[in-house]
Length: 260
Ligand SMILES: NC(=O)c1ccc[n+]([C@@H]2O[C@H](COP(=O)([O-])OP(=O)(O)OC[C@H]3O[C@@H](n4cnc5c(N)ncnc54)[C@H](OP(=O)(O)O)[C@@H]3O)[C@@H](O)[C@H]2O)c1
Figure 1 (tube, rainbow, N blue to C red):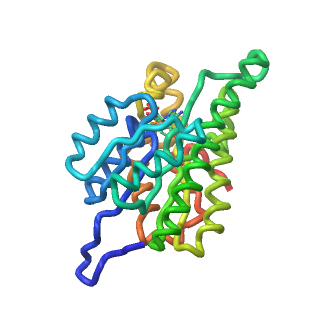
Figure 2: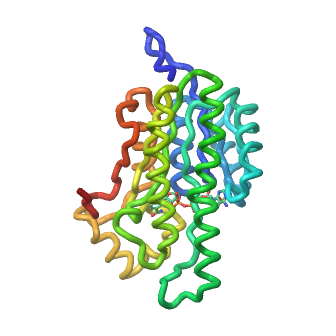
Figure 3: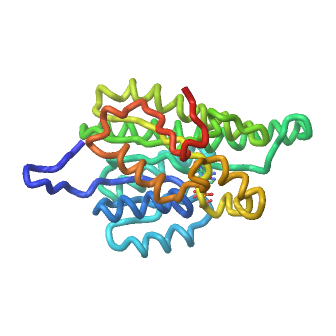
């Protein structure tokens, strides 16, 4: 990974952030762009939001669309990114699907089986496929790289109403650990963040009213995270200085859940 020359000037890194059409992904894209990096802002359905963000970021960035549940769409996404940015140095696997809750006792089997397929197809298999394709490009470039996964506290704390989501995030953390070992010889470091609740549109309903108060009280700080706090950690894990954090799963939950 290029860490700059003797004067401290480093070339812009080429970054792909999945699910950057809103929430945490958009904050991550903004954080990299503010550092002078060039960002491929990935979206699935909200093309308008992605294009607005690219305009906001200024020159040198682009929007790239793909449904990550479709394995056939992934090589094209990587090709478009590499064509647009001239290569790829950092992948942030942030996109995820959260479906309606599916508690095991009250969810019919047909729904249960469908939800598991849908959630794993995006959150775990989609990320694995994309990582395979991006890692191949990084190895070809011979420049090393960084891969950062956006996992979840739910992988450790449990998701009783969204078991498929919790399992997908546990799988994503595990994917990151395996690939941290497999890709280290190529100078590619892989790490994950595991946020608790983050104040994004996706969870705004859950964060309103009394239910929201109970969620905020999970942390001794009495609040949830901001997307920018998660973005800061992603930027650190993507930095040249973070090679020794490869394989890590960084808790970002305001001490709301302490695991040993
Ligand atoms: N918010 C939280 O409390 C929280 C807590 C822990 C972890 N996280 C994790 O943080 C990440 C971002 O969450 P967020 O709250 O910012 O949610 P969000 O705004 O809903 O972002 C989800 C992103 O995933 C994309 N996506 C959904 N289905 C896709 C598919 N089939 N193919 C490709 N992309 C797809 C969406 O794209 P389109 O909108 O363009 O369709 C969107 O950009 C997720 O991995 C989430 O699990 C969030």
